[in-house]
Length: 283
Length: 158
Picture 1 (cartoon, rainbow over the protein chains, first blue to last red):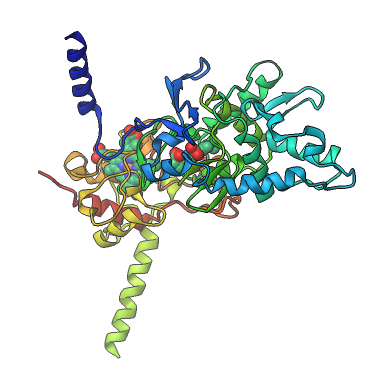
Picture 2 (tube, protein in one colour):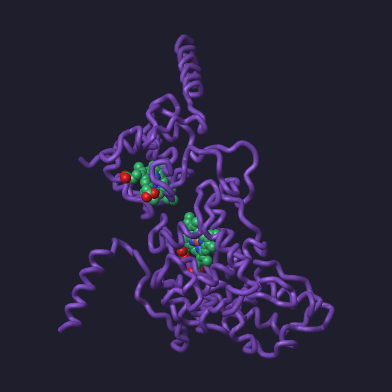
């Protein structure tokens, strides 16, 4: 009885507050291959000041787009994963090494995606996963670096992410990473370009609203790399950041720059608690 | 012969008028409430051109606003309020002020300042992601602001 009246008032409230069209995130649950359960909604970590609940970008996409991510055979990002499996085993560079010769099975990297970007003590810097991959290529394999947002890099990131799927994002923001995190936060709230828009203007103040034909999500990066139906390829985090900054009619930062590394750490931390989803599917 | 000469004279006169009357972005006289009493171009606005700017290019107002009079166009955004009835709520001077620099009227507004050329962080070259070089043009020209304002003045419900 009590429950029923609660439900009725909740429904009335929902009817009152729901705006036409899509409004907020939908109620769908994400299971991939009927086997990996993804957390797409979770209480925000303490360092989030203006948002109570985190939602994966998946929750803002159409049913059609959502469905493609639910089955690895449908998900075109897995073509990239397969290509990266070949790179993983391939000897390249003068040292005669491959990823596999040091790391063995790719499963050995389970959990890695969830904690990057992270502080690297020996190098004395915050490293993104792309930087770490390139560091292995240069210092251990004596091979050429991959372009920061290149196809081979996006594919390798997809492979490394795929073995952490379902694990909670958990990047550290304190200790030696704190200064970088603070820098990223500053950039997140900085209104750039001739349109004078910040990340927060769109992904915090306007979440769930339509900007022209786009349904705004929280701009989370737990799903990267993302296969976008729009450009039919895997997209890296910094490539996405670049696109969003460009859309404010600003001069963008460069992929791999100190600014984007800091921004990535900060944005990743805004997703602490969501599942690693990469390679995800977005429009 | 006479006709051509007359047309030329008319063109020269109107071109002269537009440039002589145009107020530069730095010289706009905003009132206390953010409104702007005088036409920025010195000329009247063109409703039809204003209607186009609502949809396209540097205006693209419907990226953020719903407008029933433009419902034949797809995808109206929801970031700002609907502009239906805007002319009932605001005077022409107020609408001119909002379009020229909404931040004077709504503190911290997300709405871009369409007639402003200074104070930007990392100003880019349109949507290329490259750095801007040379003279900064406002998002809309003085005349385009007038055109948009005259279109907004048609949005009456009462």
